[in-house]
Length: 161
Image 1 (cartoon, rainbow, N blue to C red):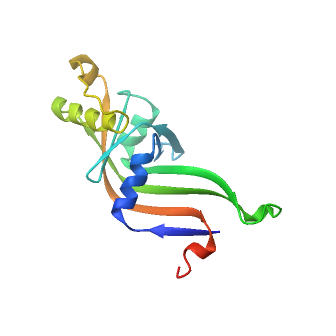
Image 2: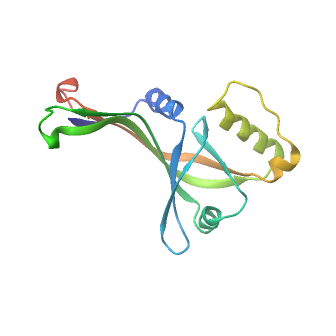
Image 3: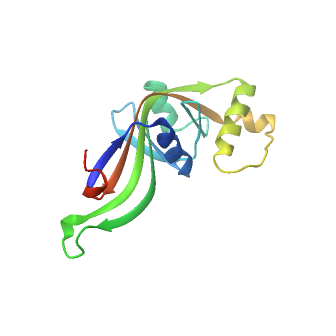
């Protein structure tokens, strides 16, 4: 089975929209990798995340705002020959994005980001109390680099690649 890279922005965004969590990777001040699953929102090339106002990941980002965000969907075990272990593979698609985190402090921008995050999970309209908005850390990640791959594609599906 093959791994196929995709460049189509509409396909990339559809994969992101199908995900219910993403995984973020940062580097702590001690130079240790740190990966967390998170809820997210995505709009116009920007990933929005939210968290508590303090903690290990916030300290890491204050030291180094670089971040990697990974999305994956449609995970399914596949094989080309049931009796050959090396022919097994997970069929899935993934998107990996890189950028830098900018924390949002403006109350109106925080509410807008929270709406974008909630749009990922619900069609409802929400309101947010001032204390709740003040107490949440909003992360804005403008995507600087993005890649998309499809894994476990049968060889005959993409003969020219």
